[in-house]
Image 1: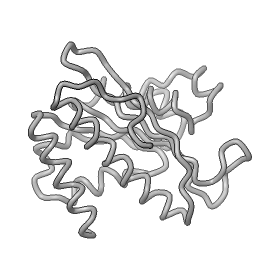
Image 2: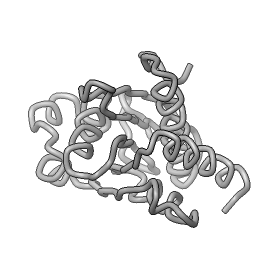
Image 3: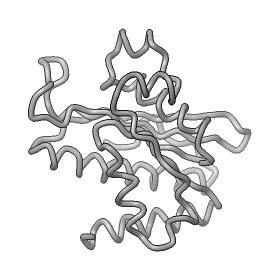
Length: 179
């Protein structure tokens, strides 16, 4: 594991353990890569609940409870869909926070509206009152298929750290996590 990823995971582990939280994943374009990175770290079982790879839209609908109409009108690579994936993950995983990701890793599959490298992420958690909350982020990542997937993993983990930092301080998580 590269040193930057190790440092990122150690920070995430510290944040989750401080909150006594476990995280989960709902992954599409990353195909389980977030869960793989997390479980490379010894002791992850204290803060990682599990993950779901929802590569096919049927899995997004049937397992993560993504609404067919939302999926149909927005497409799988959209902020509304990843928000529902994160909330679906919260319902079925024994986790306090779930990160969801869907994207077009390439080299084909893009369009003018959603070119290769388009990635949408969402973080879903329950606030102190038990209300489910989400934040979403859409970005464009340049590079190879592996570059898109790797950067998506990094953004997913960085977003988890940001949300945990705000929650620990009892602050509202800003609408925009990344600038």
